[in-house]
Length: 441
Image (cartoon, rainbow, N blue to C red; front, side):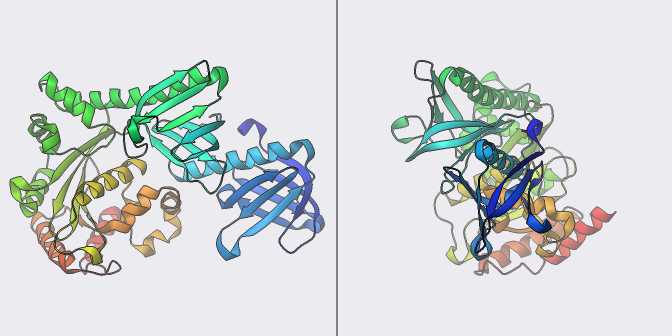
């Protein structure tokens, strides 16, 4: 795309309620600018385009959403009509992926493919990146499919029909009914083999990274324990003691044997029920192909409709707490499966946000400030991150063990009685002040 930018195309444009007039459309890396007769200029970022549709020689662009949205009709671009549509769609995809912390090189390819998934089928943009695949349907009514590489199962290529069938193996690409393909790319022609190779390479890369991370943590563990942990702990999937069996105590010791996390883990376990406390470990490479730089975190279920998360790495200095179910729905215990779903959601958000916690935790006033633009864009682009922010309750700073534990007990007691999701724990402001003080020092 970058080799075709900036592009300047001439045709006519009609704003809502106006008459068609000559216009020059300029497209560059940041967005599009429309320059009309008399020097009138309108500019928009690609992320502002909520709809782009072509019908014959007419291109409809919807800028913004809701009552304030504007629908422009662009015509008389002749043979450049298709290029206009493609550049706008590609620019929007790149910009929204960038907002969602997905880094694409300027020469990264965006393919237009036919697909079948669940009860939907159509044409979509397809892009591969280090942690997975994004399928963005041209039909604006259909949501994007964001597939994490760890959720890719069996990949089958049929060169005779030019098809690729992908079975799901995780939340972002669930297994289809009767175990059939979760996604099909159809009529790819001779490039089907290359697409199949790229899906398989992403899946195999996740497995290879997981095996290397586990081996780095417990190199002296029995082969069976390492093999089991590698299969289960793919790309940030949280795994508990019952799943890991004999591998659990080995990984638990390797992950949590450093201060202050050993002490906070002990306290969280005690509050959560001692040996019966629900708890999980998770790990992922900081970047694909870099298992020598893993990120590790643990989660513990607590009374009072809470889970605690600690990122065990240099620079992580707080315990993050999230609600499990809406406060109004909490009746003293959480429904079966709710803890597991909440733990998975927080872990997915952490991975999608490239281990940034600020978008989840910043108070509203700080999030609205100019320096937090990157976080606001990420929240708008990543559903998992937005869900984690909605569930976030507070973070407790590791400064003094006694004050940290006192704050934890106070928060657990307060939250167990809270029923209004908009209410804020009275101790949160003091904790955030400590965060700001530490950042300033």
